[in-house]
Length: 173
Image (cartoon, rainbow, N blue to C red; front, side, top):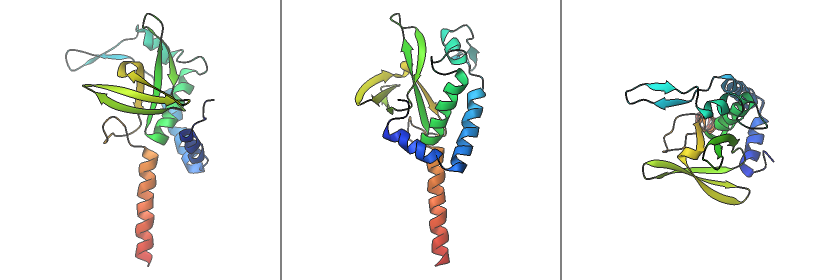
């Protein structure tokens, strides 16, 4: 099941709000149609686009058997806007080559630092396992002020609205 966890139940409740649904649909739909490039940091300040890299095919043609690239990235965008972060597990063959991307829509993912690298603790279907930064695509939907995790734009807006309403109510008294 794609949306079976408690976190995705929260997403469903948020998406029932018409304004939230409209904004998230518009933004994530736009993200789904944006081009995706695989780049490599150069020794100088620039980057090189790697259009012949195997991952280029995954992100532009066939990320997952169930979804086109547009739908795949639209889903990751929607989760990112709702939660602040979205993740995809990089599936590999026995030679270590990337062969697929599995969105972690219904998983609980906690990034953490392991030395100078990022690592991820993933809980899915009651089981917890770890992944290195080389095996997870991590998309941040907004600024990050808490280390590796970005703040949820929706939660930040809700807090701001709560403060505004509280201030307005206090001024009325």
